[in-house]
Image 1 (cartoon, one colour):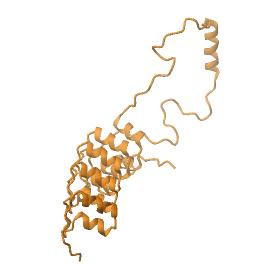
Image 2 (cartoon, one colour):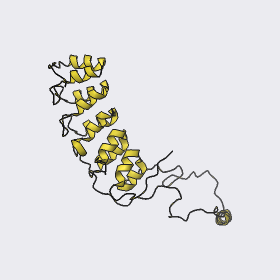
Image 3 (cartoon, one colour):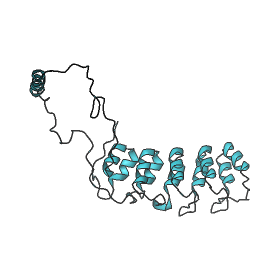
Image 4 (cartoon, one colour):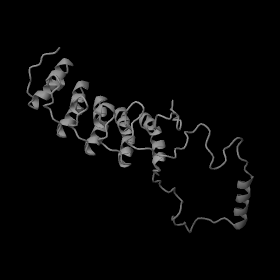
Length: 235
């Protein structure tokens, strides 16, 4: 079931956050006035006319015009230019692209954590700050890593996201990736220069985190990248 996004449904929230949460690409493009390029249909402007094809007479053209004029519009059909019943409302204003929602998240982070790659790319092209944090200092890359959204993580890394950024509690994208246990996401961050010497506030290493989670695959990989084990006492 498609979710219809109401316009200005809350004075404390911004519509752009809902569009990125639900992946409404079409509405997000309309918000920024992005027009997709379309391919001209066959027989359109610029196509050469086949001289061998028969041409209709002027009388035939007049009859066609009369037939078109005589076709009645279906009942309750919308007037050209008027809103279509049941369609999403037209969005006419753009707020700060880096503003936080009432839950404290940026639109870019919402697109990243929900895995809506096209929405994320639109936000980046429209000037969203890739380093702008949500509440708690959580960046879009951290949000994507926390939900193991590999495609969005890759897009953010390629766009220049800091793979070693820290949240207000000192957590990094690599930490979130290890806690979620997805090897491909971890490798992506390590290959991009992620610091595997991360330590928790209690001095624990990534190996400790992977061990607690029982993730053998991550343990093997972290060992291969020469991660040292630091003694740790858990309270």
